[in-house]
Image 1 (cartoon, rainbow, N blue to C red):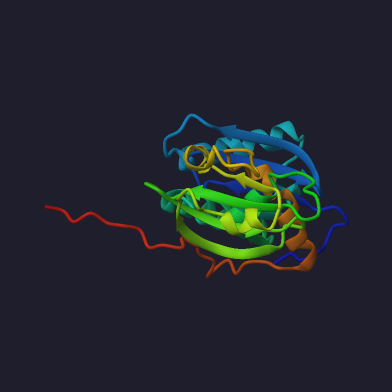
Image 2 (tube, helix red, strand yellow):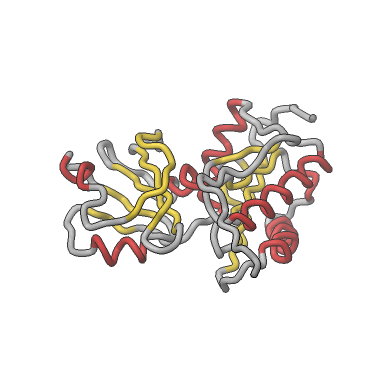
Length: 232
């Protein structure tokens, strides 16, 4: 693997954890280009190659200029996560560059720009019915509560509110959760999307620290096993 460390690395980030499909490319912390498909459906496999080609074109770069690829590790769509990881692995193998994995919820926390001391960020992905996948982060994006499934109720996150902290809620579960908590004071409802551009900073941090994935053994982090229907 080519581990030459450029002064300002160019990192391609991919997120396919939800119905959205997005790709971004950045030089250091500078976002150069981003492509987002929000038409719904599960077309990640057909969309990703076109989006990657588009961000490279818009950034005036060739694929061999990329120094690493970051993928959203999960939780999220089982099929989407596998498609994103396999695409990232293919590029890394072809270019002999590192693979970076960032938790979907960790990346999502960076949707909140410049949180203040004492702020808390709850990153949430819709897990179906009344359930979400969630994790809690402080104002420096450090994890306070690890990723886990949660059934949303009107008492959810009471403990955070009792501390007198401003609580940001971000992720595609926001519309569902907002219906339950909308009458409550102290919540800041932020983005309801998960985008590849949110992963730029955590991916860069991992690149600088040399925290790369094993191309052969890296797998998505589902949190829960998929449910299969029995054929009749």
